[in-house]
Every structure is written in C-alpha cells, then in structure tokens.
Length: 193
Image (cartoon, rainbow, N blue to C red):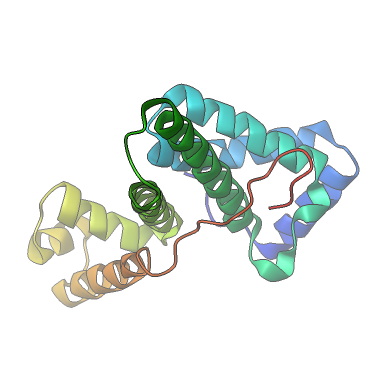
C-alpha cells in the first residue's frame, strides 16, 4: 500500500495536475488506485463497479485538481473521500433502482446498508493508513490469531510494546463507527465532492 504522503508532495502534485501533467496523474494513480478500488469494492462488493468508480474518481481529479484543499487534510484522505462518496452514491442508485423495480426494501434498509458499507470502508482505510508497526501488530493478532506474547515475539518487540501497538491500533479502528467517510455529493461532472 502507498506510504503516507507529506504535505509538500501533496501541494506539488496538485500544482502538477493543475498544469495538466499527464505524468502526475499516472503517479497519483499508481499511488492511490489500489486504495480507491478497495474502498469502492468494500462498499459495492462488485469488481466491475469498483473499476468504474476508480476511473471516475481519477477522471474527476484530472478535471478538477483545484478541488483538493490541503487545509482539509492530505491528498490520500481526499482521494479516499472521493472514492467513498462515489461508491455510496452508486450504491444508493442501485438500491433505489432495485426497489423501484421490485418494491422490496425500504429507505431505512437502504440507509442501514449504506452505513454498514461506509463503516467497513472506513475501517479498511484506517488500517491501510496506520503506521506500519500498528498495522503489523493488528494483522498478527487478528488475522493470524496470535496473542500479544506471540505478536511481540514475531515483531521482535517487548510484550508491553506489543500491547501498546494493539491498543493504539484498536483505538484508531474504533473511530470507524463514529466518523464514516460518507459524504452527500459524489464526484463527477457538474458535481463537487
């Protein structure tokens, strides 16, 4: 996954995009396409739709490089918000169409589905954005079912350090339910994120 981008890189990237440098879009795509695709896939559970969202997000960025405001956070977070908004918008459209065709479902069920998908996407984003030591500790503990002692041994750190990393990682993850990335307006022609 891409490493954290320093603000200076973000400002330079925005300037290069504003000048219309195709190489800048390629660099941005190389750095963040996997993030965009994974967030969109997490919301939509559809590879083709996630591919389409990825194209739409980078198309929006290319056409609207000045929409990025460094005062609102780093470029990685902005790109993730664009992907999340567009995927949620697509999910709402798909569910509304399905409801209109079948009459099955309700607005409440749709919003619950959107909320669950948004929380899951935010959790994925948080994990991929964590510093590598925290992410490694969580992956060992939760995906490989290691206890804190085994995690400490695998990472070559003290047990206290392993517990600290796990605690911090879990604290970051706990924000996924309270601060979803979801927004109201998707990127796209004529729309602002």
